Image 1 (cartoon, rainbow, N blue to C red):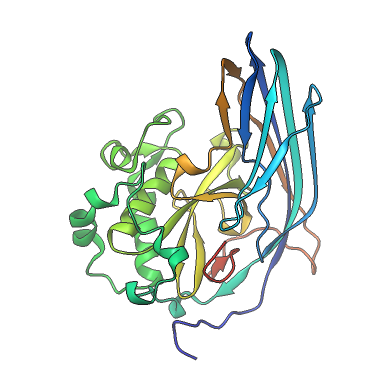
Image 2: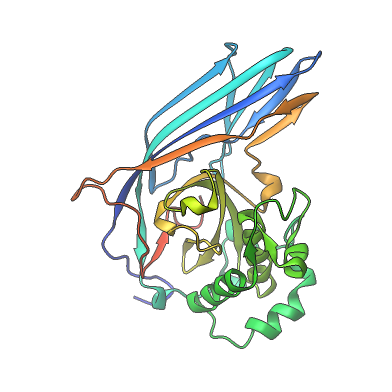
Length: 302
């Protein structure tokens, strides 16, 4: 079997549970909401149970993206307070591969689903970083270790600092300011990967295992890079083991997968997020750092 078709090794199953509470106050006119907080269904991520409640009682409409699997919930609410609560328990059966077997996919053989993530996007201006990325990473041997070198480069040069960036901050801003939160780390890594012709995409989720010194649990952003014949997970912040990531949304950058998009005069409170893991060997194991490459997507698509 060639190196472009890596042999999977033994799997490691984790069971993670998370809950989200979002509170809003709607002004005089009704407002519309589009949420992307539901756990994604993938060949490796199975939803065991999920719950949803909206106060006041509103019947939402659901839509699942047929390609990426993002699950969107849309609803309209009248003036006054509104609370949305969602919870899910998921089993994640990671596809695990030896990093040394993972090669970059030549453009000529790249599937269409991956090709879409090699272009510049709103927050990942890879076209402006081509010369810089070529100088920093172009000399490295193509494959997993070049991608890991990019992730390490971002982690070592960007300081995790809540409040140091905003919803308009892009990869270029992070490169200059060298501070940010998880979405900024992800945007910069994605832009650098695309700049050397490696497909990379933005993933939102919930993470388990981050230090309590970083604050209360929150939504998390990480990166998936196309290597061999599937997407592999990388967290350039280094604050949580990739094995502890629950997938929610997948897109080109943060503009595609906001956890809540609001239309109308609405004020919001900070999200309340909790996450836990089941430790019950031999069936389930706590997330931990692994020397193997991990994937929770299927072949070529989500």
